[in-house]
Amino acid sequence: MCIRLATYEDRREADYLRAIFAGRGNTLENTVFLLMTPDGKTRLTPGGRTPDWVWEDASAMAQGMKAIAARYRPGGEIRGVPCMATFRLSLNVAACDSLPLLAAVGAKGEDAAVAAKSLEAIAWAEGLRGRIAFAPPTSIADLAATGIRVDKPGIYFIEPETYGMTGTAKGSVALDAETDAVREFAKAQLGRFVVPVKSERSHIGQGRAKGIFWKTAIPVEDTNGRRGGG
Image (cartoon, rainbow, N blue to C red; front, side, top):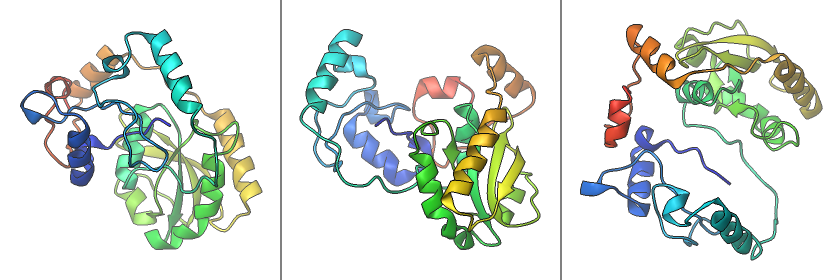
């Protein structure tokens, strides 16, 4: 499984990643590559910036990963909803990955936890897996802070705007809706979602012209990341 790193948004994660691989001067890079055992405790490859630090080409990588995968068999139940720590960060990451965002929204964040099982089933469902981003249990106020206005709790399908600073709620189902109903809702909304096409050069240039910059939780150490404009 490929994990979407928070890198500069979480100090504890940053320290962990630095222990896996650090650049010159012990700087934290914005990408890190490592294969680990399913329990996340034992390294199966050396740590590096990218897979080509471990394998010389795609063919060697495929053979190496097949050999490692043959030592493990799927087992147990996949649990949890893959999401970032906050709604604001989830919205931004969804925009970066050109994905819609599914968010369980309550009057208070903890009220939305009732939808956890339904969202978990959607996150790992065949045909939906990897096509939708998810937010942690979220409050109406969390959405309002990003300019998204909703008038009641529910599970919302949200289309991020280009830079992930705000978005549009396209529809919702009840927080306590049956899993099948949530799945059908997600499929229907996904069928209407148009994946945005972006050009990196124009995207960055237009963002700078509009004064849009992302302020990270901790300083960016990767010099390539700093040149990218935040």
